[in-house]
Amino acid sequence: MSVVTKMPTRQGYSSALSGVGSFQVSLGTGSAGDVMVLVVEQTSGSAPSASGWTLRATQVHGSRTGYYLTKVREANETTVLVTRATDSTARFLVFGVAGAKPDPSTWVFGVPRYRGTSPVDSPNTVTTANGITTTAPNTLVLGIFGEATAAAEANPSTYVPTVANGTAYAFAGQQSSGDIESILVAYKEMPTAGATGAMTATYLNGHNSNSWGVLIGLPSVETSNEIARLSAVMSDGRGNPVEVGLVGWDGTKEVELSKIEMLHSGTFVPDLERTQRVFLMGHRGGSLDYQEHSARGYVQSSIAHMDIMEFSIGCTSDGVFFGLHDREVNRTSSSLGPSAAQGGVDYLPSQHTWAEISALVQDLPSRGDSRFSTQPYMRIEDFVNQWLPSHTLMFDPKYLSAAQRVNLYAYLASLPDHQRRIMGKFYHTGTQVADDFHAIGCKAWGYAYSEAITGLKSNGTPTTEPLLSATAEKWDMLGQEHSATQAVWTETLRIAGGKKVIGHIVGTAAQAQAAVAKGAHGLQVSGVNAVSAVY
Image (cartoon, rainbow, N blue to C red):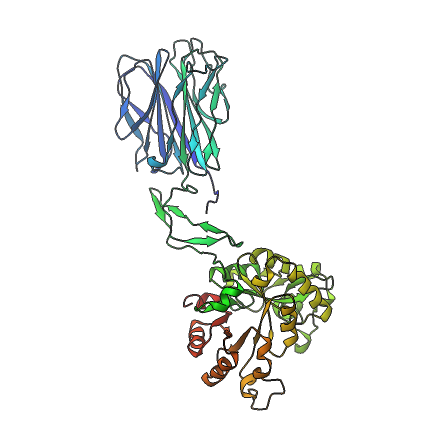
């Protein structure tokens, strides 16, 4: 995944004139790992050299010759000794770029061009550097220009040549008619790879054929697509695979990051029904670890490779569906106080607008990941837009009225490919919900507890509700509590026949493993982080 974080920083530079042979050049400010560029303009055709530097281009232009050399700056390196002919006058400029990829094999070197090359630049104050084709996104393109005229180019502190298709960075100007050459460096940032086009510099005076230009492309460390990649593919949340390539910088070299969080592409309903592996459903977006029905919870559930995203639905007075498990909002927002059952006043979504609901925050109860302890409530449209393309979405209509359910089913039926991507969910005795989802072409999950098999409540009294054996035929998948006995699980599996049975509500790895040992084909998971470590 390529994400623009920052472009390389252009470091300090130094320039001077020299009429002698070997001379010391200050490297200016910077640090180890910077890409260093040394430009030399002189009257002699004898190329300069410097230990550790690589000559990248030589260009004769009129009676002058221009050169540029590169290297990666080493630790504690402050100067470079340049050796050249003693019979010529020269100007040099050296500068550094911090943040560019310090691997010369990734750099793109252009072909130098002097002003007399066809097509001839016009007017003769213009010098062109031929375009290059960058191969990595977010490449810093440097333009290097040299020229000489009989007239002074003026004090460089008050005059810099005009650059087209780039921005002037450093100019070592010609200040008298007896001076030798000027050197200009310009830059352009290329967010995407491709052809740069030519870069041009326009000077104060004409220079006929006494000028040249060349481009060099330096991919940045942060975003280069040539970096060492981790063997991973992630989803962008819309089902599109995205290559992962992350790299760090320790000051001297690139280092591969040791951890990456991958968004898991979910599984659609037909695949859930035939898969032989244990599949996972994120209970209300990982309710043990994150605020229920929150954007953060669903992202983390995807990272924890949940196949199904579960969404319980409340509805506001102005008809907005949003994520809510309870009849009232009190349990998930501390600003509302206790519910009526606890001696307070119920805050019912049916009596409040979405503007009022969205002004609240979810902060109760305390969740496992305290970094995300406060989260806003989430509209169904936002949930669907993010996750429908990549995951099975399971909807629980909870306390919706009959009229609200009609509107909900109409909305779900309008979604693309909804028969394969959407399931219904309800307690197994609510068979009308199963019928309603079947009516729009979707499957449905009916969950039960031990009493639906034994006929006895936890206190030992007989249940008055229908048993699972009387309702199972209505549901496409069944559910049983993970803590039920093996005998209960065995009977649940017998009733299910060939249907998948999901163990609920699983908070720990041990609970998950126990449910699978009893025969669970899938798991409804509240502790997404713990369970994803084993399934």
